[in-house]
Length: 295
Image (cartoon, rainbow, N blue to C red):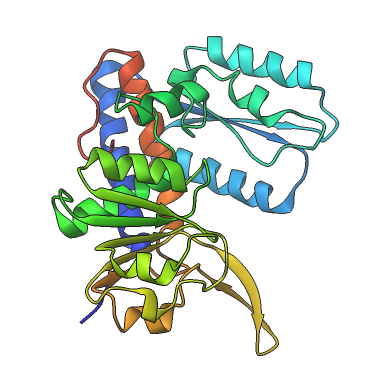
């Protein structure tokens, strides 16, 4: 019988672990991890994300620093704010909510963040450290996927993994993390020849291609673990519906384990943001990193 990997429950457990560690830090060390989130403009989806991040940060006992800037904020002013947050010892994690308004250079802004405080794991230094197998800040969504895979499989060594998608945010770092756990990794994408056959070789199939229900059941190896990173809004039968990059109904009949959409990978992203902030705080203070919450 196919196991449905409950991301909501898993994320709640991660948040509980983070909260317990934060409580010990505050009680024994007098240290409170702090997360600063910068939102430029009034994008509705971004506002929801920032609100959820703020609530989750407070819930686990961390300090939350919100900076909401107008859409016409200059690049110089935004960089000055980041420089101030880099220098603030109360701030251990910095996240600039993407996308930014078009007049701002996202790469320049992200790379202005202190790599040690880059809890999104997007800074070029962290990308390079991850790619060379060194200690880094790891992007939240791939980290959440890795946690769920380790929980389900135990050791991932020797398993064939296929990552469908090559984005800098999910696909590429996901492949690096799986390599780090000794998987044999293939990166595929929308232009891969005979994509179905490539996917059918996977013990672990990660779909992060950004196309609704592109991966169907006949592309899944019997018994494989399917991690669906996609979040796509479609209309079906005159109603709006949220679906992943995997056609859930057909894939669930074949897979050994699968993440649903919604309620799978999604909840893990904010949970891992909190875990990364905790890790950054521990590293900044020369303390042991939280077990089970890092790559």
